[in-house]
Image (tube, rainbow, N blue to C red):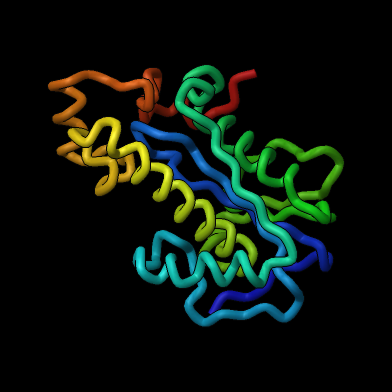
Length: 198
């Protein structure tokens, strides 16, 4: 069972979904959970089934002291790179929290400071700490819903099924039809996409 990660009572967990996709936004959530919050099912969203995530998401929304979700779209990803877009999505989610966080627990090993709020990067934090896991579930479920909505605009890419990830079918449709406005035109899974470029 995951444990809380509290340096202070009003600590937000934050995580993103969709970083490795070819299409659609990168989506982040930030969540502040109440003291004493527990749920035996809650885990890294990637380790949960879609059905489990759909059970957890409304419960997290109901029980959280505050939460927020934010998207950064393909054009902005192309402009600033996927790592900075992921962090920007986290910042946008954090900026919507009311009350504001007093500390931030970030999934992963890279972050840009959010104002003067102290933060800590926690590798695989979504599989270790409840507030980050809760954020991972909200980010994943909200992004999946977004991809299901836009599926109707370009059903040949099967976004309702693959959610924009680089499946064989998705790549074949890209080769046959070319990119849509929802695709990340500059996106390459290359080392330079995982570095800061200021």
